[in-house]
Length: 496
Ligand SMILES: *[C@@H]1O[C@H](CO)[C@@H](O)[C@H](O)[C@H]1NC(C)=O
Ligand SMILES: *[C@@H]1O[C@H](CO)[C@@H](O)[C@H](O)[C@H]1NC(C)=O
Ligand SMILES: *[C@@H]1O[C@H](CO)[C@@H](O)[C@H](O)[C@H]1NC(C)=O
Ligand SMILES: *[C@@H]1O[C@H](CO)[C@@H](O)[C@H](O)[C@H]1NC(C)=O
Image 1: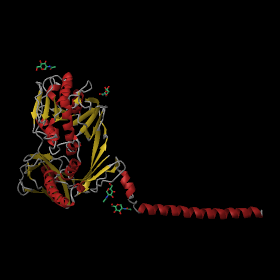
Image 2 (image 1 turned 180 degrees about the horizontal axis):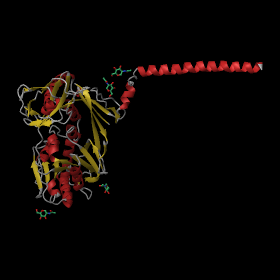
Image 3 (image 1 turned 90 degrees about the vertical axis):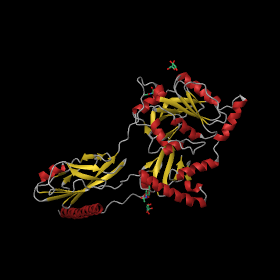
């Protein structure tokens, strides 16, 4: 009996103890929980942050603080170091001046962020209002959502144009028609809303692309929305002819220098598959030789004028929608199907599509990372961005080999900078960043003529002279890095 009571007591004590412990634990748990929910989570550590938005090993979080870090197997160029220390100060000053002129001409004129205000009694268009220079549009979507219980005064204001109303109302109700500031007073919301449906915007500046902001004030509320002023591009179309023949759509372009024996082999191989297609040859050889082919246009240039100058000249003479770039030592074969490339450019947004040269599927990405006033960072990475939708043999990339089909108009708008006299190729795609969309297909192929020394002594001699021009010297490399610094306003360049 006694022991039983004793046991019950023990049990009771146990319950009380367990109860207290649980109570404290639960309270502690909830207090802790409340405390953590009250304090905000800490920002990521710098290391976690840097790894969060990695693309190809580069953190692409846009915060104007790019850098070119040395990693294994990577070439890193800090571009200002390719000028002498006395020189760099003046180069930087000149570059700064040119950059500000470039920006005033090209940078978006309007970079403000417009925020929607809470509890606005007004509905208004937040995006998509567009007008051509000097034209007038009706502003869509303006409406007051409020009961009829006060006298409303509403102000609308713009800076790059004027406002007006398409209905006849008295001057007491609407002031400032045809001016930058319109004031409307009314007792009735319904009446006001009727007027709001008929407000026009007239653009008064002539710009290809500008943004105005409409500010609307209604008692203590103020909202803002953009009006885009845009002159549409005039069309420049190329007639492909009734049957869309390849000859009417594509011109083959090449540049030659001293190596006629190679060029003749190339033309012979092209004629096997495309007997009548126009071939444009830019030629800066020392002793020009006339090519005998009714469909070859040969343009003679001053001796040794250079590689990109020749590309520019050839492409400037194209009158078809597309041109195919080839080097003078390529060889067409049964897989050199220009039609496949045309199909890609005709059915996608791409401007350039490359193929495969001698089995090499060479392509690269160009990642421009935002920097400070010293310039952006450019990262060259081999490979492509992703597969091209609808074309399983093709990819979207940043740059391709010397064998590509390009949209004539678009490629011309980038141009081949004649400053590049010798080895250059990626430079065209760097200059084309933001203009060109580039792809590559692995099922369109061209061959490369064998490198072996020609047995003909004259050709062998030409080959020797040619090589001295094509071998990249150090001062040429420094010159190109200097161009990246000045012309492309870059701070540094990495390649992997
Ligand atoms: C993280 O980076 C920022 C900005 O670069 C710097 O101000 C901060 O000190 C860094 N924090 C740590 C813990 O290194
Ligand atoms: C900017 O982003 C980089 C990662 O790309 C980071 O390391 C750096 O701390 C950030 N700087 C600032 C000022 O936020
Ligand atoms: C090539 O052009 C010639 C005339 O210049 C014409 O007789 C011939 O049929 C054309 N060949 C092809 C395949 O279009
Ligand atoms: C892709 O390339 C292969 C090999 O050249 C070819 O057989 C196939 O038809 C191509 N696919 C498409 C969709 O063009």
